[in-house]
Length: 411
Image (cartoon, rainbow, N blue to C red):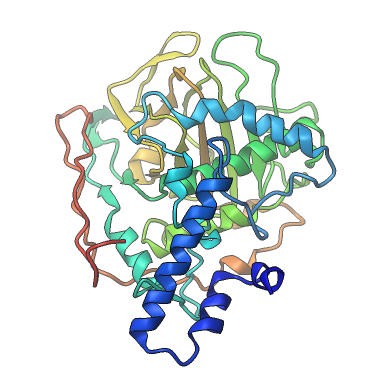
């Protein structure tokens, strides 16, 4: 009997034992089962273990490779992001952090507006929980910095947006682990040729690791004579399922417009000292595009005339901090007139930049992903309060606000 029960999900056990019970007894039974699960997690989880990856959204460590090598890679990186420096959030991945968690707690919300049943836990449906999370996001959309461009003064950062609190620490960890697994597979040559790139570091600020999904992008003329831009006759790996979940989240939460859904992305893995020089993103990609930040906060600089001070070091008039778990949107003058750069980072950082390709530049063998069609945003008046700007040059603090309750006082 015990073996049979162990193979069932918690929801199935609840349904089995509470059939015919009144709502009060069902709630009591649910609480007791949750308590038992807490005890089990306390006994089995160690500080180096956080959650169990599941489903298609995880990259299988055992596919075409040695599992022990993958596990050691994850453990080597773990210390670098369990207690990140310069981070606006503290990470607690001890066993106590995971008390009462169930498997689905470590999955990004899959509500995509298409339909489906929402399970009810602690009196809250998945949709209600999503709305509470959405209400906690803080946004800033009124960046202002005027520079003289072609004899007239323009707000060169018009169109920029910063949304904080979009991905919580547990979700960040899941995404980071997924990226490290792709990095390991790239090192082993188990990704398509142009997907993974790890250039030789010949000087400070050169050689960050990149992983491209959806399309192959050239930063400079390559050995075959292809100019900078999308290389239409090259194939890279498609968007991973977990990344598509991230896109769904951003569409649902009114960060990504349904008219410009990303179909490609680039992952940047920075070591200490790595940077991105001043540039304007290639117009093979439509505006807006979106950068999600992980591991450590850093600054991105904007200006129509950014200066190179030394290798990897730049100066510019308008810095914007990028907190971990945030989504930064580049659009308008901020994407087309002002240049931007990431000066040498002080510690390890990861970013994912999602972009939509120009239809006339799509790879020849590209097929649209039907999973990213028909996603509807939440039509809900924002409950969050905006991020307040502190001074004129763009430095600002993110003031913590308590989210307004949605049908409950607790999440």
